[in-house]
Image (cartoon, rainbow, N blue to C red; front, side, top):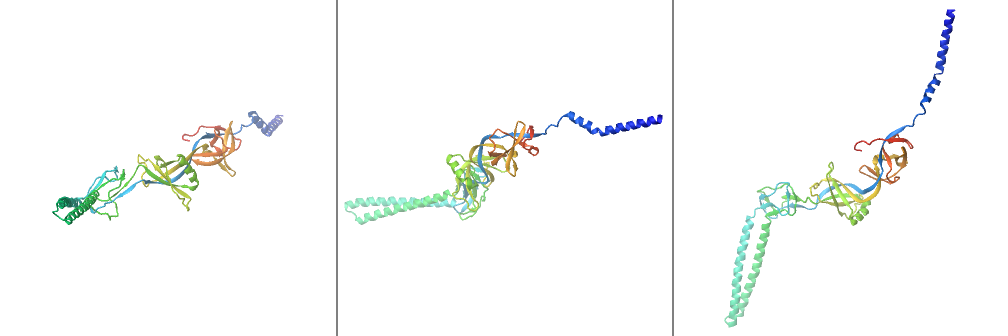
Amino acid sequence: MKKRNLIILVAALAVAALTAYSTRAAWLGGGATVQGPPRPRVVSVELAKAERKPVPVDVDSIGTVTPISSVALKSRVETTIVSVHFEDGAKVNQGDLLFTLDARQIDAQIEQAEGVLARDRAQLEAAQRDVRRFGDLIGKGATTQVNVDNAKTQADILAGTIKADQSALDNLKVQKSFTTIHAPFSGRISAANVKVGNFVRPADTAPLAVINQMAPVYVTFAIPQRVLVDLREAMAAGGSKVTATIPGHQRSEDGKVAMVENTVDATTGMVTVRGIMNNENETLWPGTLVNTRLIIRTENSVVVPTVAVQRSQSGNFVFVVKDGVAKIRAVKIERTLQGFSVISEGLSGDEAVVVDGQLLLSDGSRVEPRARKAGA
């Protein structure tokens, strides 16, 4: 009996185990039903505002700094250098003495010309006395008319000689002025190509030094011909502006358009523009390549960060978030500048757009905003 009871107990346990295994799905499903339906996925994104604000219409280009005035100093007489009165690369002012040349030979010629002039003036005075004396004698019948005429002729000849002597003296004084070289305008002077004792002459090809005007300066660059009409209208209204920035630095100079070339380059379709900069701090150096920005006018437009704009086969779009739901909004980009895109169609301003997390979104996705990264 004990053996029979043991067999019955084992069979009962086996049936219970089999029943429990076959119904596991039911009691597992019952546990999920207790938890309720799964929540919809919420994507964490960064948001930014679409803004309507004044936006400049500009053209970026590469320009070159050129001096308004540049002069190569050369000697106008054959002589030697006596002294140099500046340091290489120094800033000079208009009228500053730069070079002194040997003027001893010209000084001697001036003294000789002054002596000739004094002699001829004395002879003229004597001839004028003869004219007066013969004039008195002819009235008394003590001389002939021929003597009077000859005295007048001699006086006239000496008067002409004095004019020639004076002209020769003035010419020598001009030559003397060439022995001191002054700065014709304010600017920066180059290194001197000659030293004290060097012989110089007008035929020399190398200049003594070069002076470049530093303030103001020109910035020359090229723009596409399509903006030429707008630029001319802006110049007529006085609204054009030019900004020149040194690559790799934040220092820049502002100015205005000074001149537009009268011909468009047929090979490139570009027209040369010249801007004038005050450059009082000498930020721009002649010959430097700079990044130029020509601001033609300012328009009131809707802008969004460029990272918010997505691209597809059908065109550009952004994700606009309203009431926690992201919707696709097709947009038309007019232009981009400094990390922003100007929207001509699709946004009216003040919309919240997604700038990070777009890869996890689709039309109608639920989102929650998160704090933007520092510096974004």
